[in-house]
Structures are given as structure tokens and as C-alpha cells.
Length: 149
Image (cartoon, rainbow, N blue to C red; front, side, top):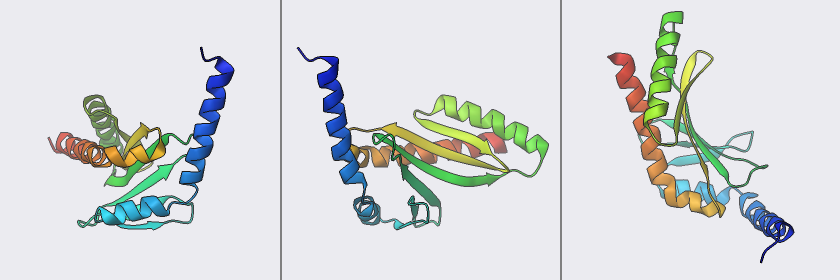
């Protein structure tokens, strides 16, 4: 029977292996390029990628939680008034409650969307990437539809 100490050692070993895999973003860049995105690394080490329609996304992997991966679609909706901000917060909350793993939120004068996932091992993120992007796009479209109605 495994003890807590044995399990902790196992998790530490798995995280060390994940850390080695994630220390070089080249694999993720190549993956995104293979999927048809224009992709590069920004000054913070995050991966920026753009689709063929010009939408720009961010991919971030946590250095402290190696199982956590996030895709962001920043500033997809600009907020121009207090009234619009109130409506945006309401619509964001509704969409977040309706679409699995998607979060839509107001940040400053804009609305962002994100997908956050835990994947072990880290490369399993690639297996759910298309579904994650579908959920992200659906959350953005759902938000826009609610704002326009």
C-alpha cells in the first residue's frame, strides 16, 4: 500500500519530468504552427498566436503549477461606458455559467475570455486543444450575442 510519502515522491518526480518538458516552449510553438497559427514568444515568455482571421491569443503555462495551462483571448470587446460595463459583467457571468471551462471577464476597459485546464502529463494539453479553442470561441460568440440582444 502506498504511503503519503510515496505519493508525494511520485508527484515530485512527475512534476520534475514535466518541468523539463515545459522549460522549452519550442514544442508548443511547433504544435501551434502545425495547427496553422502564426506563433511566437513574447518578452514575458508567454506564447502569442494568431489565427488566419487575425485574432490574437495567448498561451501560458504556469512555472509553479506545471499541470495548469491557459489560453486567453484578450481585449476582444472594448467597453466605452459605465452602462456598457454593467451589461458586459452580466453577460460575462451568464456565458461563464453556460459554457464548460470558459471564463469571460471584464478587465479594465475590455472583456477577455479564457480557458484554464489541468493536464497531466503536460503534453495532454495538445489532445484537448481543439475542443478548448472551440469552447473559447463559443464563449466569445455567446458574449457578443448577449451584448447585441
